[in-house]
Figure 1 (cartoon, rainbow, N blue to C red):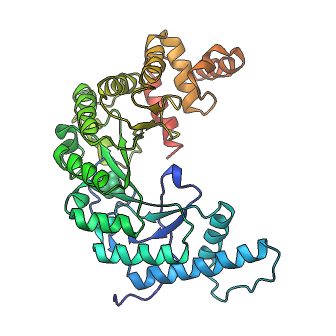
Figure 2: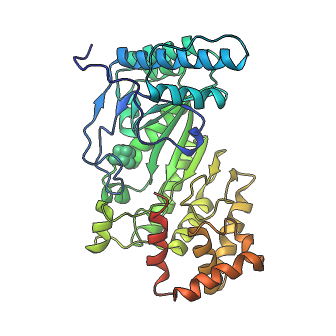
Figure 3: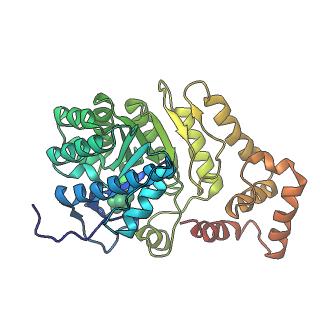
Length: 373
Ligand code: SF4
C-alpha cells in the first residue's frame, strides 16, 4: 500500500476519440517514458502509479453515483450518495447517459503496473460493472514486450479487451530520430503478443514523422511492421507542431525537414499501397487528419482508399490549396466538397484576403492545425 493520501477521483488529460463515451479511470499518472520528441503532453510531469486501493475507491464512487442516476432514471426514489466528489459525479453522470458500455484506463501506459495489480483492478471493475462491453488502455510496445504471454492472457481474461499502441513508425531510423524508445522489432513483438492474447489492437501511425528525409522509408518500413502485426485497427494521427515541442526545434535546427500536407498524402499513399495480407480496419478519426474519408477494411476497401489520395495528388495546386485551407479551418471535410461552389467560394475568399500562396501555405496550415491541439 502507498503512503500517499487519497486525493479523490482523478482524471488524466487525454483519451482516444473513440473513448468519448467511456468511463475514464486513472491507473497511473503521466508517462513513464516521457521522452518522445514529438509529444509534449506530459513534459515536466513526473510519472507515478496510483495504489490499487485508491483506484478501487474511485470505482466505488462511480458505482454509487451510477446506481443513483440509474435508480432516478427508472423513476424510483434514489438516495443521493454521501461522497461528494464532483469529478466522480460528473463522470458518472456522463457515463450513465452514454450507456456505460466502455471504460478507458488512463494515462499513457497503464500496463506498466504489475500484472497482478492490473488483474485485481480489472476484476473489481467487472464485478461492479458486469455489463460493460469494453475496457481499453494505452500501452507502450516496450512495456508489452516484457510482459509474459501468460500474464497478458490473464489480463485479457480479467477483462482488458482493447489496447492502443503508439507505433508512430515502423522505421528504426525514424524511431531513433524522435526518441520513441522502441524499435521496429519491439513494436512487432508487442503487437503480435497483444493479438496472441486475443486483445483487440489499435496501432497508431504518424505520417511525416521522419520528415522529408525518411518519408519513403517511413511508409515502407511501417507497412512492413503492420503487415507482420495485422492489428485490428490502424489509426492515422497527423503530427501538429506547437513551438514547445523538441521536434519543432529539430526542424528549426535542420535536423529534419517538416513534410507538408501534400508530402504526407504521398507518404500515406505509399503506406497503404504497401499494406498487404492484412485484415485491419484503417481509421482516420482525428481532426488533424487530412482525409477523414480514407478509411475502411483491408483488403476490400484498399482501392477506394487509394483512389481518394490519388485524386487529391492529381488536383491542380490551387484546388489542393483550397482543400487544405478548407480542412484546416474546418469548413471542408471531404474532398468532394471541392465540387460544391458554395463551399469553395468562402475558402477562396479566405485565401485571397490573407494573400495565401504556394510559398506561405505550409506555414499557415501548421498555424491553423495548432488550434486543434
Ligand atoms: S510514450 Fe506516448 S505519452 Fe509517452 S512521451 Fe511518447 S508519445 Fe508521449
